[in-house]
Length: 88
Image (cartoon, helix red, strand yellow):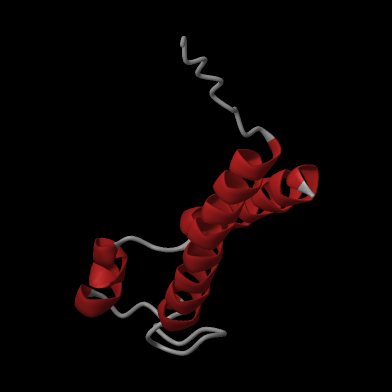
């Protein structure tokens, strides 16, 4: 079970990296505003920012929930017991 969460975590990390690198910065549209460049593309004039931001947010939430699940599973499988001997 622990290794399944780790493999899932690895793929979530790769997807997050790819999504973050695919997004444009805040100042990327300034060239379109001051020039006659074509602002319409596959995703429209606003670009793909809305869809990519929502997808990144969903993957980030899944990432954090998976982190918590990895911690819980690791704690349950590697519980340490304290043996305290009382002297009488």
